[in-house]
Length: 378
Image (cartoon, rainbow, N blue to C red):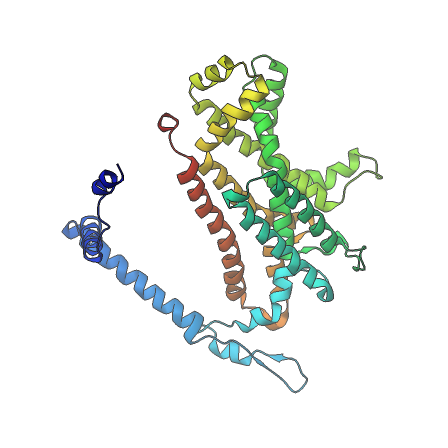
């Protein structure tokens, strides 16, 4: 049996065969006709030209550091001489702390850096299927407590830092992570509520919630949470600005995620519901064990798209006086010494956003390949 199985296997492709397949793909997709060849060559020339110009601007002709004048202040004359020809990365070296950590006290910024590393480590562990166990939830709980202690201080000998001084990348990660962590369970409940036939009142409330939230922009919810909530609640229980912004993000993200989850529930064949009922499962057992696992697999791409969108939408908290990563970059440019060098600062900020968003996009591709197979094939 083993020998027969080995005999049926195809030999591994040689390097020459792989090269021939690559050449055949290029010929079939890029040089199939005269028009296709001309377009390919024109785009290749354009990309090569832009790439060489960007390399020259960002690396060859760029300025990486500047000196100081007789008074000990930074002298950006080298950057002014290279303006229009090369980038001035010296602004990043001088303002990277403000860009990354906002107004967080300089002496305590090691705590904000530890928070960023904790978030990245949690994301990396959570992305590996072999760690998908109950212990991961305990790890998340312990890490979130550690993040709160590091950012707030006031215990274990750490200096207290008010939340008004939180900013930069740690604030962006806190708003995005905590917002989506609480929004996803809300979205699942709302999606199930919209499909409820036995509880029409619940279905109507869920429909009203989704349509109302999706009918207004996020910035309006942030304004309402920041300005109207203190008018309707006693001063003793009014949450601070960070919690109010988090509440607005949770409500907004929950409505959009609920529609994505509802799409998966509707795409699931009716036979899956009938099979769960035939096993004698209760409503919640059938949803937890049969319906939701399959429905969520069908909507991995829209869920990932919503996660990426709301990670970037955290920049809107500027309107209520909070300074995330993008807002901290704008503050860095308020220094008269570095005015006019916003391209370099926003290139760095965009690169940070790109790293997180691209990682989420690639991870969604991995989940789609692993779990997103058609139901009929399983």
